[in-house]
Length: 240
Image (cartoon, rainbow, N blue to C red; front, side, top):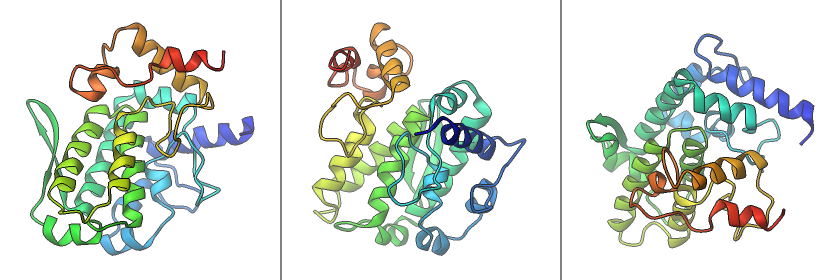
């Protein structure tokens, strides 16, 4: 990616999520205007999800979709106001899927809402484009510092998968698991680490490894006390 394009993506994402700026995306839409759409428009429009839940990888569906670079990554990890806005986006999409985001003494939880039976008909199926959206959302939350919310959403998805009687494919569940548990430098669609991840994501995972899983590190992200597979320092050595 060229420096100019990266800088443009950086500015657009931070400004788009900054509550004091509320900049529009490439199509003239603000975050608030998108989140105000009804469920029918959220379902039928296919080029907003890449802006609301951006990733470090370029979108295969939208050339103008912003990409998370190092400056954007650091901004979200250091600014509670950006995280709060992202949390609002998550709550809206969870409602679209029939869930509710709840804050408890144990941290955020994602539970089935009163409209789950009707809302879930749209995506509790063998495969649906919403499965791709869900993969993106889980990964984006982790990349942009909402690790606990990503974990809560994934736990809710696991519960739905187990109770779906095979209506959700194993492949979709595999991608959701990859999005939730892999080191951030390794995208869900990659079968293995080939050393092509972004440097700042390798550095982030290496720092977590050096700290022994403290903070939002590997131990926290799994939530079970075990390290994530493929330690970041080993993977980085492959391309050193």
